[in-house]
Length: 156
Image (cartoon, rainbow, N blue to C red; front, side, top):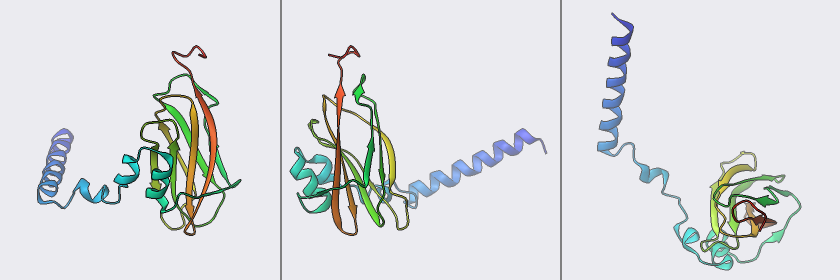
């Protein structure tokens, strides 16, 4: 049998299986989005965001949380941010931008035994504090870093 024909048949069979699985509900994006914290993403201020994430508006400052982000971001649409946590039993890492209309930029639920590290790109509307909110052993910890956003990359 021709190799190209085998690849075509294999691709067609896979596509058929996936489409039948999606149609029957076996593969459903609702399962992946089931734990999405809608109220936290819809919150309009820092206190409401923290309460929706961890059930409290109080979080202890921690030196075990390291935020890596640029001091000056020339393009607020794509600001690289990584959070590294030197704690055990990290359950959740959330990235909050104080100055955004919707402060919660990202939220990650970590599985048992996972290393407390996340990296992503966020959108910032203006110069603001980027806050890493970490839930570990049922308690909330935070750390923050100011990121300056320039307009048009000219330092203004």
